[in-house]
Length: 89
Image 1 (cartoon, rainbow, N blue to C red):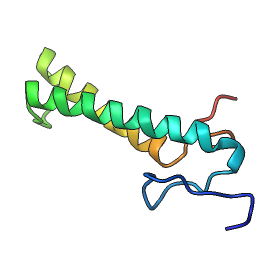
Image 2: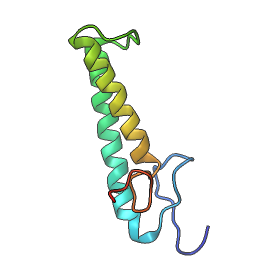
Image 3: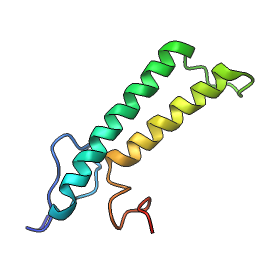
Image 4: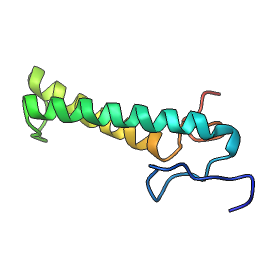
């Protein structure tokens, strides 16, 4: 790690090493990720976590919850930071 790189507290071990200029944005992404994981957990409590092919609204919500967890994972490892694979181009 160089003097131009930092890792934000709360980031998972596989997180991107973040430039100081992006540290505040990354901290925001970690907060968003925690919110999304909580939302997904609430959905799973409501409709369960069955992984069969979707056939009804509950199945749709289970898939939606898994998508929230996936998005939270990408935010947590820095994929949406400038230069990352999910960054706006």
